[in-house]
Structure formats: C-alpha cells, structure tokens
Image 1 (cartoon, rainbow, N blue to C red):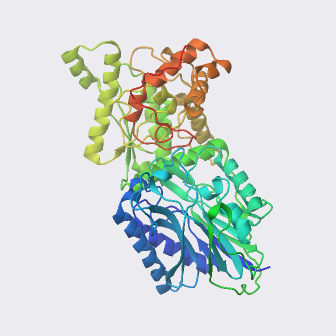
Image 2 (cartoon, helix red, strand yellow; image 1 turned 90 degrees about the horizontal axis):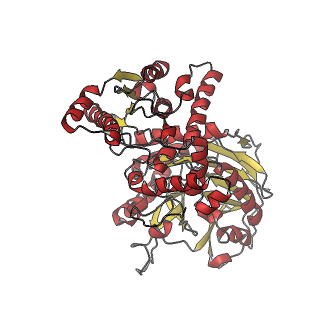
Image 3 (cartoon, rainbow, N blue to C red; image 1 turned 60 degrees about the vertical axis):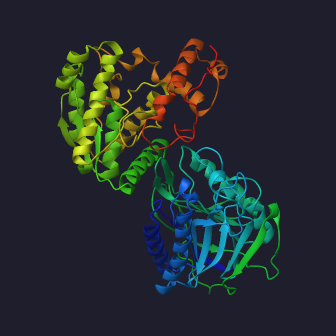
Length: 584
C-alpha cells in the first residue's frame, strides 16, 4: 500500500488579519516540509479567521481573501515549498452566483483550496451549511456542489469542510463512491463541554460510512465568545484511533498512513447528493518506501474541570491579545467569582498584567477585605485599595436613597471607579458575573456588569466553586501556592450591599437554582416539564419569572467565553419585549 505522511496543522488564526494568518501558514508549512510531509493541511477559513460574520458580505473583504490565496501560493513556491500540496481554508465567492431573494449578496462561500506549484490547483466550498446555535451560515454563504478529490503520491484524498461531516449525506457517501483512500476534513469546530466525546464518535462513524481513513483537522484558539480546542483526530476505516492531538495546544500533528492505491478507473461525474467529482491529479507515483517514524499518538484527555478551566484561559487570552490589549483590571471583592476571574486572568496574561482593586464600603466585611488582599499576595497581581465610602456618602447626601437603590448605588460606584481607572491606565475591565446571576438578573446594570469581557459569563455558580477548587488542587499538585483563599470558597456568597446579606436571601440555594436553570435555559424545558422532574412548582415559577424579566440586562452584558451548548448570546435569542410567561 502507498505510504503518505500527513501534516495536520492545528493552529490559531485571527479574524481579518489576513497577512498575519498567511505568515503563520508559511511558517507551519515550512515546519511540515522539514518533517518530510507529503500533504499539508490547515483549518477551515484559516486565511481569514473564523467566523467572519458580516465581513463575508463585504465584497472588498472577499476579494482580499481571494487575492491573498493566490499570493500565498506564489509565496510558498518562491520559498521552495511549491512542490508540497497545501490545503488552506479561506473565504471565496461563487463565480456564477445569481442574485435572488434569500441568497447572500455576492454569493460568498466558506471554501478551501489546494496550493501547489505556485498555483491554486483546486477550490471547493462547504456543501452543508450549519444554521443552528452560533452558526448563521445560510445568512452568509452559498453551498458548494462538488466532491473534490486530490491524487497525491498515488492516493486519492477526498476533501470536506466541517459541517460536511456533521450532517448526513453529501460528501461522506460521495467519498465512498469516489473510491478515496483518505477523507480529509478541515474544521473550525467551537468548543463546548463534552463535545470531545461527541466529536470522536462522529469521526468514527463517518470513517466507517466513507469506507476509508478519516483525518479530522481542528482549529485551536479563540474568537470573541468562541473557543476552539483543537482535538485533531485521525481514525482508520474501522473507526480505530490512529492519532489524537492535545486539546488547547497549537502545533503540527504528523502521522504516517498506509493507504490503498488510487484506482486507475476511479469514478467521475455526478455522485451522491448531486455532487460532481472534481478530481485533480498531482502525483501518480507512490512515495518511495520509507520507515515510518511518526505514527501519531494519543494525547491524554483532560478531566472536566481542567478542560473548562483551560477553555476559559484560552478564550480570555485570545480576546485580550487579538484586540491589542496588554493588561486587565478586576474588582476584587474577596468573593469566589472575582477570585476565580483573577486566577483565570493571571494564567491567561500573566500576573504582572493583572490589576486588582478592592473597593470596600461600610458594609464590606473585614474578612472580605483580607481575602482580596490575600488573593493578590498569592497570585502576585498588582493590587490597591480604594474605598467608595466618600463617593457613597456624597450621593446619599444628595439623593437620600434607600433599599435597593442604595444597594445598587454601591455597585454602580464600583463600576464607575473601574472604568475611570481603565480609561486612565489602559487596562480592560473584566466583568465577574456568572451564568446563574445573569440568568436571574442578580446583577446591577452599570455596576458589576461593566467591562469589556466576562470570563465566567457561561459558568454556573456551582461550577464556579468546582473550578476554584480545581485550580487550587492543580497548584498543590505542582507544589505551587493555591491562588484562591480557602475562605473565598467556603464562606456563603454575598454581595455585601447591606448588613448580613447573603445570596440566599434573594435566590434559591445554588445547586437547586442551577439545576432548574440548566433545564430552562440550556434545555428549553417549560414549567411543567421541570416540575415533573421533581422541583417545587412555586420555586420553579419564581425562578422562571426572574429569568424572563432579566433579558434586557443580559443584552447589555459584555461578551464572554462560551463553554456550554447554549450560552447567553447567539445561542439563545429571545425578545426583550415578551408577553409570554410559563404558567404557574
């Protein structure tokens, strides 16, 4: 059987930074060539970054992508890499797209190309377009109608893009019909909890359906609220894992494969799902026999807490760096949420680039002040204390506020203080709110909701405690100082806006609350379904009312890392003005 050394480059890219992305592609192609690769691949839309959203509708951006692709092919050849076939994802447009109602203007396409000999020798567009969750690809793209097959070193390699594997039909059965020995899919599949298990089973199933080895190349990095965890996988035709890359780690997965020789009378024409085989022959002769030195490998899977924590770190780091910032600012209350956010920030951008401010009021307990200072000592972040009492007294003297208005004033003064320091010193403010609080509106607009990014926006409170305990445990295992004071983890959560206040004055116990929210927010279950699962009817009705009436607050919250199947944002789109309520 012919041998093929495949280089799968699991790398990050930056939306809109086409020149920088091209530089990265050249760098990793050179690395792949030095490793003796016969075929090199990069993730979905790596040249433009992903997702480009409405940039796809801008003709100038589409043309910039197309031009950069041609120039990249020429550059690879000029740098002595032209004889190495390279698969690159980019943004294209259909050449014969005709305007019609419901079709994206300009007929953009989520595409990939094969570069060889200084030229673009093969282009193809994603056939199946996702239109669920965070995806709006029917809004942006028109589908491809070919089944690309590349013959390299005597092996037929069928090509696909991401959703082409996730949906039934299309390029997977077409790969079997075309008689390909390898199906290579380039992907930008966002991370969410437990997706690695789902992804592996999908790849195994599709390999068996395609009747050939399947290489699933994934993107790594972050873009706005999305995180890409890598997890590149290669399985044989029976679904057995040949290689699996680490999560949240950039690099090249090199794998030697024994693959069936291409048939001399390989099928042509239109095959499954109306796809037309587009076959390009680069090299008929197999590679000279060599001793395989790289046979993949299987990276250990991360446990649940470590996986989520790493996703939060990668998401924050990408947001800070790609938006040109160097430092972040966190309001440190001594509580668990701000402590976890600070720990994530220190791991993402370095403690020297994290600035914390304790902003006590007359209601702040002494232990909370001490916990904030202790967190700073343990992590080494920059720390100062600025009391809000003089500002609070001035407002109270002028307005005479009481009750909730008095409580919220304290939070808004802290938000104003943080934004003032941000403007003065150039740090971006991190909002510390968690998913439980955002769900029920237990946050103050223009107070604890201020900021450029919310690292734990998609993390329920019960998981906040789990992640804090994990981060401390991981530090102990490395003989390091645990970053989060134990008192911040064990004391009852409180906003400390009035004497003796605790969260349970206003909310159910968090384990119960989060269980209800998981069903309502993530699972779209109604009141009756949740009550039938064993929850108190009155408690469920009250919780659902809080969620429904807080939509306007969530719309004004900053973006934050998505880790669940349904985060607040593009995943869950509800009207603010909404007369529907689940019946009690």
